[in-house]
Amino acid sequence: MVTRLKEVDAVTVGLGWTGAIMARELTKAGLHVVALERGPDRVPGEDFILPSVRDELRYASRLELMWDNSIDTLTFRNFPSEQALPVRRIGAFLPGEGVGGSGIHWGALHWRFLPSDFRIRSALTERYGANAIPADMTIHDWPLSYADVEPFYDRFDAICGVSGKAGNLRGQKIDGGNVFEGPRSNEYPNAPIKSSNAGLMFGAAAKELGYHPFPAPVAIASAPYTNAENVALGACEYCGFCNRIACETNAKASPNSTLLPVLRLEPKFELRTRCFVTRLNYDKAAKKVASVTYTDMGTGEEYEQPAGVVLLTSFVFSNVQHLLLAGIGEPYDHATGSGVVGKNYAYQFEAGAAAFFEDKELTPYWGSAGMGMCIDDFNGENFDHGGLGFFGGGYVTCNTAAAPPIAGRTLPHGTPQWGSEWKRATVKWYHHAARFNTQGSVYANRDNYLDLDPTYKDAFGRPLIRLTYNGTENDHKMSRYLLGKLEGVIRAMNPTHYQMEPRPKNFTIVPYQSTHNTGGTIMGADPKTSVVNRYLQAWDAHNLFVEGASVFPQQHGYNPTGTVGALAYWSAQAITTQYLKNPGPLVQG
Image (cartoon, rainbow, N blue to C red; front, top):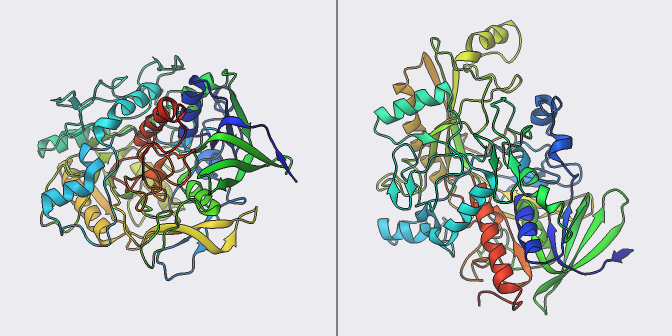
């Protein structure tokens, strides 16, 4: 029997970055907000303290902060003709679980998309001709511009205490920053974090080659910082334990360290943990979601929570699954190309390299995950694609830092994985190896999508979400081009030897690559080709707002979190200043 609860003003389904932002902005507007989180609570001063937080085995290897695949997972295949199989242990990407979500364990790289990214289909057509875009490349322009979202990028920067160096301050280009970025209204809240020895070498070599190196922008405070919510963040201690692990000093921004300290004191905010939302209860005639149904994971009891506004603030896969199960929007049909829910799934196309320097001490044991030197000369439309046979691009970085004891051992190809020779190689190269990465775009393709699996179900009997994804010819050509540019910089660094690591032909779900999953509930200007409008409001349910990277029409050459946070603030402003005054569609379809 389902217990029906008293209606509240708003409910969030998930409490990561977008859930925390929306809850904070709506409570400030006077709304009573209930946050439903499927995982446990996580409190920095209780859960992320020394010495237990510096446990690479617990967090980085055994993935304590990640998705629980025993309850819910997804199925995967490379091609529509294949049988998809359940992912029993997450590997290629690591969605977080519990209060804070993936915002706890992320590497905190904090980028803004380029102005041309927001109008990429128009930009490519204008520059290369009306027939230049392949028919199977289903990209489209965002329904808002860089200028629209820039003030909200700025707000999110101030919440996170981002460290970096502006390269375009109100239209003035500044050497030492990213001169390719869109104009910023303000300098970064904090100066850049320190660079590694390898990063400094990379920057010098890149500059000699005529490129424009700059320190990576990271949501890690380089100095003690008080954010826009008057919450104090500590300074980075360069402890070396960062990726997949929480921050012991609250220097690495998370929802838990930046917004939850204020939300927990807000009388209009209520947090319910270990509450697994199983269903959005959709009133199709009224074009609204009347309530959500969830199961208390401790007691097994089912509850129905009515709400005036429903905020879908889960990870990409869950956002899509909820809409498909509720019948909100037309499911994408790969065979015909019709429908929108599940369309334009995209990932991040990364490929790396390693170099070894017998005569250089690179101190890999200290640092933070985002401590890197970058070049952006080959991202988006920063360069001419004429005659190259691909579109898109990405940034190139030397990200050698934070090499903890288990996973931080970069060794030459061919080294045994255990035994005396492995030990000798570890001793020889641990202090003398540098890691590099190319982080490339994935422009949406009609063959990459999400739908409901016809065979496999989760612990609640719901069909699992099915991921059909593989790298395209465009992706591989783009990646090889970036690797070629990276190899030129590595050669200029004069290593003892180096090794390039191109992507395999077919995507594999097993080794980690990135958690940068996007698409499936894409935003747009037309309900026939998108799921949500420019304010992230569902076309088919006016009180439902879908937040997060699932709304990206395609994935550009940057980490998505900066744009995810900015869009949440953009959406929250539309709700509080427009929707609450006159509930209904904010854009006429």
